[in-house]
Length: 397
Image (cartoon, rainbow, N blue to C red; front, side, top):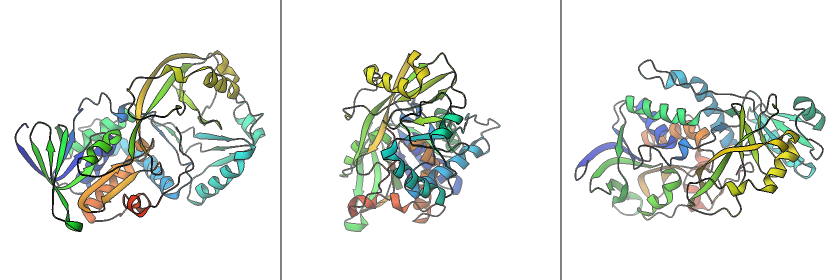
């Protein structure tokens, strides 16, 4: 495409799961629309979508996040039909043993309060006292616990890379065009509230002229936004996922969130897990930091699950969270002051599970000028300028 122009109705920056979802919904809701997805790494070697732990939960403290995950769960269950291309139906391996949030006595009241919000919004989360936890999960050490919250049947994990691949493939089958290129600038016109994006300028000298633009560049959204003069509080934060083996099985193991902050879940015959690094720095190399699984973390694992005293680290990988440091929630919808620029970024570790709902919401904003299927206004980009935060108590990592 070097030195040439492409004109489309909508240009999406980023072909990860968020960009793929926006493209899927745009071309599904309006098959006449011309859509280009601009992606510099079409092999997705560093893409967070290909490095995600790919889990889904309803145990959030804010109603908008609960609604998005409920939409996402329904989408995952329907995905083989929705994302079929030429008879090829994706296998996403959805499993729903639930998330198990554990609380010590000082944390129990907060867990009960969150559970009340979740149940009020239709999330079937069960509270378990220590005796109930021990009966359900005899391999779990409960001596220092006061409460657990389990979403069996409504939460779990799936094959995130397969979802990303299938959603992008279906979007392209519906007419979306994948353009390999790196965005080097935005061509802006107008003034005040009438300012608009007229085109994306690519590093090879070509241009993608557009009626609307969508910023969905994941952990790289902040430098892309800066090209349009936008200060975006989205930072690339590395997370290492450890694959460990354990000689003893843990029957019916859900995804466990320990009161100290680490997490683990089954992955085939092994387990994966991780924690928030300290210090948590920007733009670290995408190489796993084996040092994070130090004696303290190993001890914490073994304290919660005595069988983990014999665990072995088999391997590890690393990916980026696109961490929105404003309030650790997604930034969605139209950008104030740029009439035709929309955002789908800043998911802070929730991107894979929220992408189906976010993609539909942003597509509806482009097509109809507002939210239709789900009211995602709580997560609108406008809250940055308004000084409004959506505080989510349940952020993992």
